[in-house]
Amino acid sequence: MAAKDSSASPAAHVAIIMDGNGRWAKGRGKPRLHGHKIGARRVREVVEACPDYGVRYLTLYAFSTENWKRAPSEVAGLMALFRQFIRSETAELVRQGVRVRFIGDRRPLNSKLRRMMGELEQATARNETLNLTVALNYGARDELSRAAARMAADVASGKLPEANLDADSLRPYLDTADLPDPDLVIRTSGETRISNFLLWQSAYSEFEFTPVYWPDFGRNELARILANFGSRERRFGAVLT
Ligand code: FPP
Image (tube, rainbow, N blue to C red; front, side, top):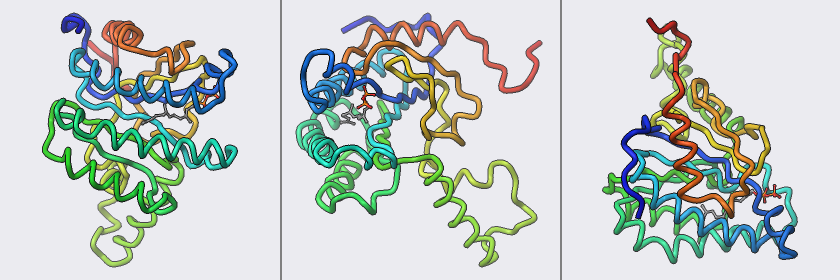
């Protein structure tokens, strides 16, 4: 295990758009699902590395609301991979002190997967070393419309006075209500889009785009990006004196 890198100013919350699994597999003459399988191993490696670098929150974009448009065999393979990941990793996540949460709309997911997700959340609820949030059937526009609908209902019922509404009023209605905003958003595979990920929460996040495909992303690339983050100056719109 690498030594703690205390020189880097830690990004307490890192969010990652894990991209490039398909291209990685294609480059090796393998089916796309093979890339996702190796990608799942990288999830394990990055989860294990985060506490060593002062990262307390890790949020991973695993399946977007748009990903249903992929071939049915790939969607089914990904869903099977999520179930397999929960089955094989629960004990290790508990041992490592990882608290797992899921964000996104669970309703369209298969009932068995939903049950397993709930059980994993319960089994890890008291853990504190790392907060791992998996975005599954997540889309920021979908999250924002669900949040706005619930907020509107509270305004209509008088629970939330309209006169009190401000820029932070939506926060408690978001899927991420219990989480701090991400300090750093990483996207792998050379693409430079946000792709409907944490749009509200990333208002002041730093962004880092790496050409590395997700199945090749590991501890070393994370450490390099975090060291780079540590050297940036974040102003949150203010002028620093
Ligand atoms: C994007 O690569 C990746 C995904 C849509 C799936 C991400 C899922 C994993 C890494 C599997 C394991 C995750 C967990 C949480 C167990 P892509 O298929 O769009 O790649 P491409 O752009 O090269 O086609």
